[in-house]
Length: 200
Ligand SMILES: *[C@@H]1O[C@H](CO)[C@@H](O)[C@H](O)[C@H]1NC(C)=O
Ligand SMILES: *[C@@H]1O[C@H](CO)[C@@H](O)[C@H](O)[C@H]1NC(C)=O
Ligand SMILES: *[C@@H]1O[C@H](CO)[C@@H](O)[C@H](O)[C@H]1NC(C)=O
Image (cartoon, rainbow, N blue to C red; front, side, top):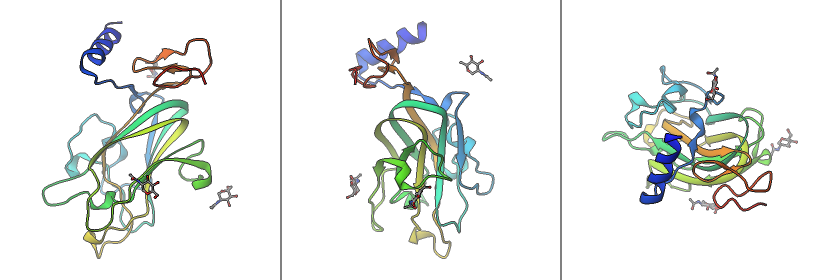
């Protein structure tokens, strides 16, 4: 109850409202397509937002595709997804160019684009850098949230392949049938708009 009041007050007075971070649920399982040098997926949801390599998950080189999957265990009503990506004085977020964010009923290993809904596509080209902290709207109901890339950054040649170096991922939303930053039950319907509560 105290948490509820606090959240409501902070939200009301500051305009900073955030739904529940579903990555923190004990029923949520995060998985990486591969792990480089012990930089496992745990580093992507430990609450540590530091952006140096040491604090970030990291997939292996020499793979055509890299992904990070958040399996919520069952469909949830998602609002937005926030990613903190590795960046350092000497190594920028080159490998984050052209990533995409999908949601799906199916896991990353078995789903192709026809099974997925794309929430975001980065179109950054070689001369430029994508944002290293990005908050993406993704109002969907889904079980799997997949960050994926097939981009091979020229900066790390001769190392080849697509890699992801995600320091933290936060998936914000509610259980289905709930809405609002404090996840209240929809009024008079089974499912409603996660922001407005309007029955659909
Ligand atoms: C998971 O979290 C729920 C709700 O907070 C709690 O009731 C349950 O006991 C937890 N389960 C485990 C295995 O920790
Ligand atoms: C996607 O998967 C479905 C069923 O597994 C398959 O029929 C379809 O051809 C695949 N599409 C692509 C573009 O690979
Ligand atoms: C990237 O390009 C696609 C296709 O043109 C477009 O739908 C998408 O909105 C673009 N992404 C951003 C972040 O502008």
